[in-house]
Each structure stands twice: as C-alpha cells, then as structure tokens.
Amino acid sequence: MLKKFSLWIQSVNIISSDHSDASKGKPLSLNRKSSILCQLYERKHFTSKEFRRLWDHYDKDQNGFLETAELERFLRDLTEVTLGEEVDEAEYEKFKSKIMSLIDDNNNGKLEAKELSKIIPTEENFLLVYSIQAQQMGAQLSSQDFLEIWCHYDKDSSGYLDFTEAKDFMRDMMKVNSLKVDLNNVTYLDTFFRTFDTDDNGVIELDEMASIFPVEEKFHNALKLRKRFTKENFDRVFDAVDKEGTGVMTVKSLPKFVTDLSKTSKQRKLTDKEISDLCARLVQMFNYKDIGRTELSLILSSHCPRNTANMKAKRRSDA
Image 1 (tube, one colour):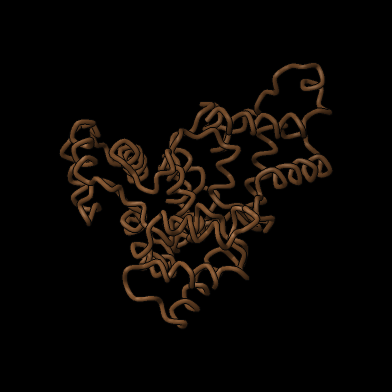
Image 2: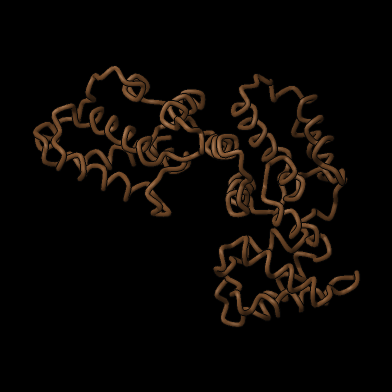
C-alpha cells in the first residue's frame, strides 16, 4: 500500500512542481471538492470495497475499462482533486499526459483496474483488480494474468501452494467476495482443500487453482499434459535447447523443445499434430513472444511434492 501511495505522490509532485505550495516545499493539499474521488482520498487509504465503489462510479458501461468519456471524467476529477479547480487546459493536458505515461502499461489509451490500482492507495488484496476485470467484462482471465496471480501466492516458487500460501489466497478471495470467514477455523480450510485438492496430495497445484478462475480455455488445454513430464526432465531438456542460457524459449525453438520433452514421458509420445497444436496454443497464450522458463515450467511439468503424506501432516500441524 505504501508503495502505491508513494507512486501517487511521485506523480503529483512531477506535475505540480510549478505550483507555489510545491515550489516552497509544502505538502500539496487536496481540493475539497465533493466528488467521490475526494471523499475517498480524504481517508488516505481505500478498502477493497471503496476501490470497487470508485471503479464502478467511473466505469459506467461496466466493460472493464475507463475509456473515452469515462477516462476523461476520471482524469479531470483527479486533476481538480490534486491541483485545484483553477487549472487551465494546458496544465490539464500536461497532467493527463504524465498520469497516463505512468500507469497505462500497454499504451492503449484506456485504463484497466489493475493499472488504476498503481496510484490508488488500496489495502493489500492482490485479487481485487482481477476480480473487477473478470466480473465486469464477463471475460476470461488471460493465461499471463492467471500466472501473475499464481506467482504472487506461490511465495517460494515451489510450483504448488502449501497450507500457508493457500490460506493467504483464501483470505483475499473472502474479501473480494465480501465474505466474513474466520480462517483460523480449521474446518473452512479443510473444506477448501477437500474441494480443490482433487488428487489429495496436500497441496494446491496449478491446474487445481485454475479451476477456481475463469481462465481462457487454451490455458486449461495446455495444462492437460503437464503431469506427463517431471520438473527434472523439463529442466534437463530446457537446458539442452537453451544452450546460451537465456532463460527463455523462443517461438522458433519451441517445437524442438516440446518434441524432446515428449520423449521423456513414460506414456506414449505426443504425435506431430499434438505437438503442433500445443505449440500453437502456447504461442497464442504468450502473444507470439518468447516464453520465460518459469512460466513454461509451470505449464509443462509437474511440481507435485514427492512425499504427499508429509505435506498433509504439515497442513494439519500448521492448522
């Protein structure tokens, strides 16, 4: 939260360097306009519910973006709240340009909830902006958005969520869905694991967590093969193909990598068509760009812990 608030202050200071208060080193005061933005900003901290309220206020057509008139309205309110009402068009355009360059990551001229959250000091709830995006757009999460969520909760990069990591995930899920649950009550966590730990190995794996989210279908299709290949074999084949140690798999090298990986499976090898289809899905999922080792490993190899009995015993002890 403090990092987001610092980013907000940074953006304000850059734009406001020519104003008298800022030039004298005094803190910039907010315009006391009776807008929802000012009402909430006076609290210095947005709860998840307040951030959602703010987003809904500006995203009138509920398409998951602030664009055209919605974006203009938000930026003008932001300008007035920050710099005051006596701002001419030249100052407004300068402010608008700076803010958009700061938070419009994909340079598409519109804002998504996760972009807006960069300058709104909101309580730490990583799932909030993805929830808004999926619910309001009625759309599926992209593969890359889902992997970003996964990596956030898989703190130790083990490839699965243990009890503690799953508890953090559940806490955010409860807040997003406005549910009040005592996560110290073992019954709730046991129910969660019984529901989503489908192979009963004591941890939540990537495909199990993907079943909770509306992730695009091609991601689910790609995951169907992951348990054929061990993490050890994945690493060995990846190193052999990535001879220069770049840590990425190029689009050109991907078919050879998948072909060689297929040969390590104790099950039948993939057919040429299956290899071609899988490569096509992967390339589409990552927008025809090189694929990082971590992301590819999560999709194409099993990270299941060897001693599942120990994991379940640890879960009980942690509870």
